[in-house]
Image (cartoon, rainbow, N blue to C red; front, side, top):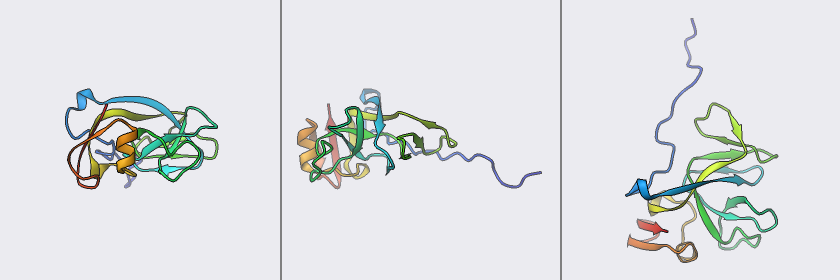
Length: 137
């Protein structure tokens, strides 16, 4: 009889909105090749490959300097852009869910800065970009 689990379940991997989860909205997006991203990573769309996203940084120059989405689950993409989500038992897919609106704890978001809040049409509800609450949409 086996003594190790074949599959394990890790609850709590999905980024949860801070309040009003029923009003948060998601879309399925593609990720660029060979990426490992945490849940809550802000994503920008790559200009040369519309519909493909990578981690936002205001200093990028490939289109991803314009934040548009927030990654819902930790995800890893391979060299062909196939995505494996954390806790999906190795299943690969072409798309992953990402939020485009909702209210989030700033500490849960990776790459959040004042520029991202402005560009995404958000507003800081309370606190700061490191320890506050932000609303998009």
